[in-house]
Image (tube, rainbow over all chains, first blue to last red):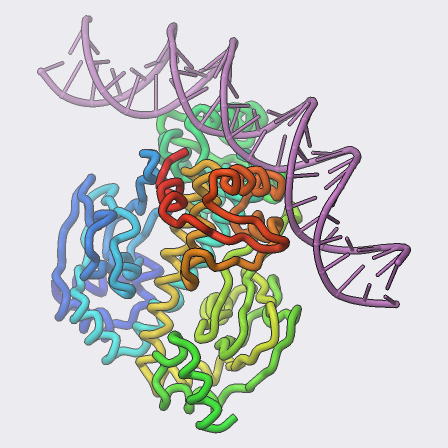
Length: 226
Length: 226
DNA sequence: GGCGGCCTGTGACACCTGTCACACCCGGGC
DNA sequence: GCCCGGGTGTGACAGGTGTCACAGGCCGCC
C-alpha cells in the first residue's frame, strides 16, 4: 500500500481521517497489512494477545461466548477502530473474539512495533486513550442497562447504539437472534417486542433487517425504567 | 508534601511503589494535594469532567445511580488508582460518582497539567493504558456475569473480586445491601444466598461483614453456569 | 438507659423472561 | 422446481427474581 491508497482510504472514513498522515505512514512501515473476508476470525477469545489490530476497511463483530454457551456481542467496529489492546496491554488472554462481517483490510501490529510507534508519536497514545475511554463508557452503559432496565428499554437502547451511524429509516441488517445476543435478550422475546413496536409503527420488519421509523418514540422508551 | 512523605506513602502500597519517583514528583508539582474524609464525594455523576484524580491513601467507592433509582457499585479503588479519566479524555459527563470510604489523601490534576505530564513522561501514558485495560477487562467480565449467570454464581464472582486483596478467612466489611448493589442482586436474595452458604460452612456472617471460609467451593460455584 | 436507625432474617406473591415446541416463510443451491 | 437451512412468528409453561411486608437484632447517640 502506498501513500495514495492510504489517503484514499482515509478520506472515506471519519475516524480514519482523524489519524494524522504521518502517524499512519509510520504505522504502515511497521505493520503487516492483511486482507480479510467474511467469517475470518482476527482475534480468538482465550488466546494470548501479543498483537494489536487497526481496522482500515470493513466491519468487525466483537463477541464472546459465556460459559453457558450463549454468545454475547459486545460491539460492531468500523474502520479506524483499534482492537486487541486489552490483552496486549495487560498481558492476559483475549477477552473476546473478533470476526469479519465482510471483505476488508486491517493492520496487524506486534507488541514491539506498537511500543515503538507509541514512543515516536505521543498523539497515538492520546488517541488510544480516548478510544478506550469511549469503550469504557459504553461498557458502563451496558452494565447499567442490564441491571436497571427491563427488556423493552434495553432493546430500544441497543437499537439506538446500532443507529449511531445511520439516519432514521435506515435498515439495520441484523437477524433477530443477533440482536438478541447484542441486547442480552432471548430471540423469542426480541421478536415479540419488535412485533409490538411494528404494530405501533415504530419499526418496520423485513427479512433479516429492522428499519427504525420513529426514533423519538424509541428514545422515550429507552429512557423509561420499565 | 515533600519527597520524604511521598516515599513513605509509596512504600505502603504495591500499586503506588510501581510509579516511578520522578513521575510522582513531577505530578505533585502540578497537582493539588487534597485530604478527604468519609463520605466526601470526589466526583459527581453527570458533572463535566475537567480533572483527574490519583488516589494516594484511603479507599474509594465508584458507583452510579441508574435511572430507576437503584445504586450500582462499579468498583472499590485502592491507593495508586487513577480515576476520572473517562470524562477527562472524551470530554463527556462523568459516568459515575466517587465517594471516600474513610480518611485519605489524593492528587487532583487539571486537564492541562495531565496533558503536560503525559508529554514529559510517556511511561505515565503507558501506565494509564494498562490501568484502563484492566478496567475494561473487569467491565467485560461484569457484563458476562450479568448476562450468563444466575444469582448464585454471580454473587460468588463478586465475592471473589472483593477478595482479591485478602486471604481466605478475612472479613469483608460490607452490608448485604452494599453487596447487592455490587453484584446486581436484591438485598433479600443476597441474604438468602448467604444464609444457604453459611449453613454449608462456606461463609460466616457477622454484623455488617461477610467472612469467606472456603474459597475453593466458592470458586466452583463461580464457574457453574447456574 | 432508652431510643432510633440501619442491618438482618423470612414468608408470600406476582411477574418477567427464558425455554421448549412447532408452524411458516423466504431465499438459494442443486 | 424442489428441498433445505436459517430466519421469523406464537403459544404454553416453569422457574427465578424482585417486591412488599413485617419482625427482630445490634449499635451508637443523645
